[in-house]
Length: 294
Image (cartoon, rainbow, N blue to C red; front, side):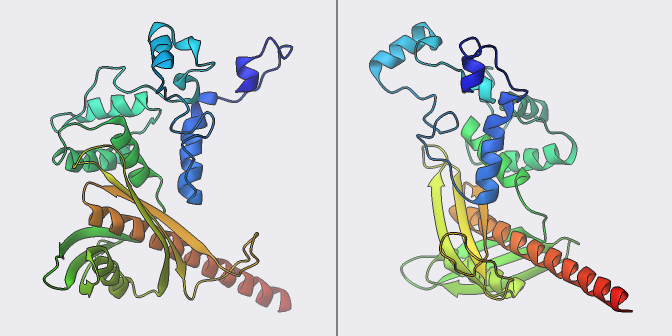
């Protein structure tokens, strides 16, 4: 970005990098690595183009170039509501596709169908859908591993008068349904235990975090978890030297328990997908050794 903004001062240097993909690439790296971008991070941080000072705001209203050497459009961002489109429960597929295109996501076909389905589910519960809500839906639908288990339904009961209970219905890749019930110290704990009883893969929950995407009681909750398979193949941690392999997952929904279960399933799908690939490579290597020895 320094080269692009100061080409003349650098003697005409240039790159062939399409900077409009920087924002999306940053989000993909954050999603796949499980490491969130700090709000104050230059260029891609949430506060990179935010202005709180009264003097700064006045200058921005008069001329945006006063305090911004580059614009959000340069890295693939667009300021909210510049197109005038306000999404809600009456919005159609074309309006959603237009908003996605404005945000830098060019999708069609089944991907658009999946995002639109989740959009309508959220729109029934929220009056207005913000750009941040759309970003959360995109992350939850597109930046996910191959589906081995998906959430088919969830019912929880919780309170101070008794144990929290959860009934979970999971759907396999070939559309087979499995249902389990469990109790726990809270609704999320009960739901996770119900998922574990269906998947039957021993895992340890290492990290769990949640934040509201927007303000308000109807805000979408974005959940991120990190798990470790107790019997999964191990690798050596570069910093600590520990032999450990972890898998992160994220989920989003207006219901905090649903959001939590989606994140847990995302991490489980990553772990199961890695296990399948590892076992497949081991089988190929074994066959190769047998052929060579024969």
